[in-house]
Image (cartoon, rainbow, N blue to C red; front, side, top):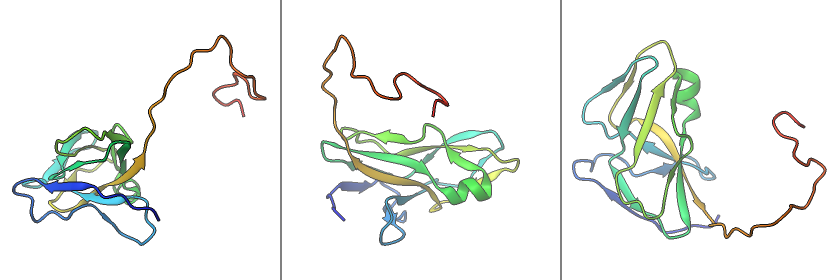
Length: 147
């Protein structure tokens, strides 16, 4: 598997928070961890921004996507809003997670808890070429539910 070097920084006071890590050899996503200073309770239907205690410098031409963890979603009804969240190569602030509780029970976020996944992807910027018409396909303009 191809690898890319990325500079990462633990923000002050978060030396105990693990860096993002792959939990299996062929995992596409790295688990990222909560850096809450004290337990955060997320009530049913409530959303909160959860700190991760890390910042990074992605190389130009890359993005990081922040995605929910399937186990939290299935077992606890916990997911992320703005999914996947995009971290651009020029962003240098702390990575934050917009967490929502879709269950009927309060959810407690504890320091060091695995809260989300991060996938680093190569990206391309588009150079638009305006055209008077587009090449036709079998599908054409068939949309939602067309196939």
